[in-house]
Length: 190
Ligand SMILES: [Zn+2]
Image 1 (cartoon, rainbow, N blue to C red):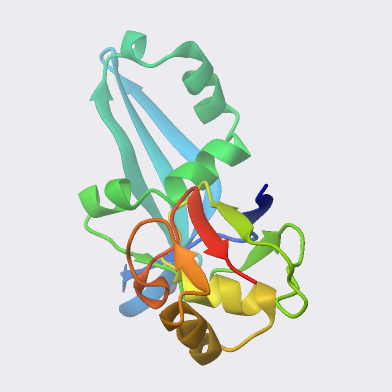
Image 2 (tube, helix red, strand yellow):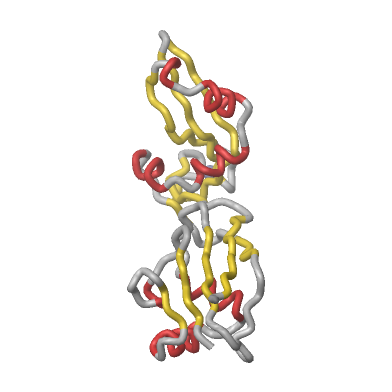
């Protein structure tokens, strides 16, 4: 029997965006405020997520829904927009498609996260381990970085272990070329 260990990657903050700030007159970092703005007009609803310039607090609204019939928005979702639901705001702050529609790109450089789950000690490993990595957000982080942090070994050693076939990823790609995605399975051999 293979032992399965689950790690969950939990973001502690959110990606930012870099765009021109009209007040600063230069490119600046904008951070999600976690607040939505709703506007109802002639039976059409617009919804935005409000961002703020890190330096001068000028706001920028990221369009989420544009001129949508209110009846097309599920009541539960509508209520979450109105109450600035934290999980929903986080979901949109990580949504690369919505950012692309708004002509801005996400910046993950200052993204902080926890790797929750049991520690694996590579030395003294007696049986293969099936490691499942759960991540509910797109985070643009390489898998070898996650492994290196949690296993406490360097990325170059990880690469060697990958080349020797000791650590394998189930998607057929090379460990050190794979980006984090949800439900990656990694096999670690003793
Ligand atoms: Zn500014």
